[in-house]
Image (spheres, rainbow, N blue to C red):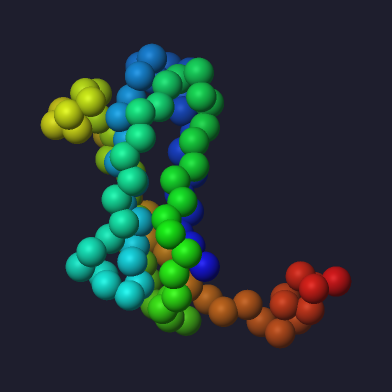
Amino acid sequence: ASAVFALTILPAAPDELYVEAVLANPLDPASPTRIRRKVSRADGSVTFEGPRTTGWRNGARYRFSLLIYEDPQYTRMIGRHDQELLVQRPTESMLRQLQE
């Protein structure tokens, strides 16, 4: 599985933004995956997807962040969103539904 973070860009946002997604790395929590991307208001929404990896533990909590900057050097932060995810293994009935 991989970590995915989606961002909706509001119409009132600046024309250009520089976003850094910090995605949890279950195999090495001290080394999260960092993805930087320039986005524009015209994009409407963007998705940041980390590499496929193993090691996600059932019942564990993982932290994800989006850091939003106004400059291409990523030095002037204008916003931040942090989110925590609780990993839950799907029940057998849910897995059956997915296979149908």
